[in-house]
Image 1 (cartoon, rainbow, N blue to C red):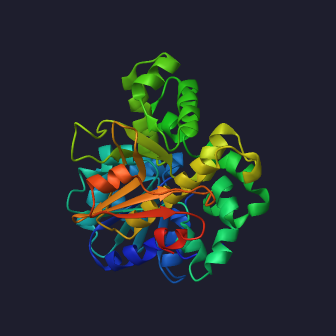
Image 2 (image 1 turned 135 degrees about the vertical axis):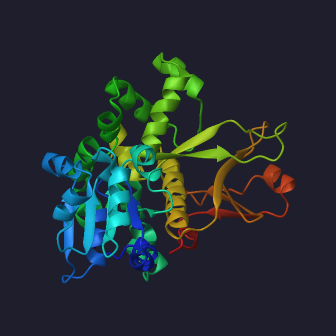
Image 3 (image 1 turned 45 degrees about the vertical axis):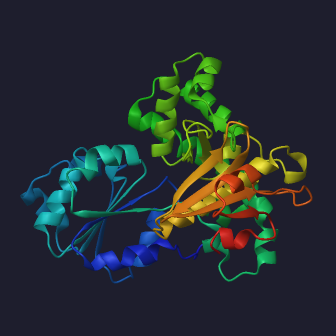
Length: 376
């Protein structure tokens, strides 16, 4: 699986001939560096700089034209990894774009919060932004039969889709523990100087058990004896670090439908399972429905983003407790989806929803029809 082509390459390549900085964001270890290596052939003259290294950060802090000319030399491509680690990163990229017309400037980053604060504003009108996620099922199994893909679902439900995990399934548990502990949500502690890492860990565990359920910041705060504003701040940081994402409630009638609640999902099932330390096979678990819902919704969201589709995503519930797992709104068209792992249990999309939105298309997503939903 090491030669898997990333769908995002097709979005990035057309911008290589335009005079803009290309910014590729995504969690650590999702394959940003590998994708860039695949985009450029061996003849490209690339200056590759890793801002995780102290000496590189010090060099890039010298943000004046003479110093940058000495740095750039005869290279025609500059790639800066983990650009958010550099002080005044946006100004650095702006100087490179404005003063080196024949050079392609590419940067990667693993924290959208830091990037939005230090990079986007100085680069207004000078950059194009892309998001790379863990492997999608569409990338892993394009061209495979539905049977072949379904046969591999248990692995992805438990261990997720990170490239290193997929490339080494025999040691997936060990790699996943290392990935989670060293690279992912602990970035939040590094970038934002969180003073209570134990609180972050507790919040993550609670959210892991609430996948697919509505999340109340107030209730989480009461349970952990902290303010609800603190809970929301931590969740926001985890979202900006690409560990998880929120779905808001869809509503056109505030008197009958929930409007203020949200659901939280993980971008990767393996990370979710690593947080709670559960790698048991599916027949020994009581959360398979949650795993299925998380995998399907994250896969759909990844592909919608990668393909740059103008789709807005929600969940739906009314005050009579009727609900729909996942809603998409696209240019006036409404689609509703219910996720169902166990096909022996009858499941349909809520009649209350269908009665209220009778023009919406409704579909139950299960292991025998999921491929189209995942855009495979």
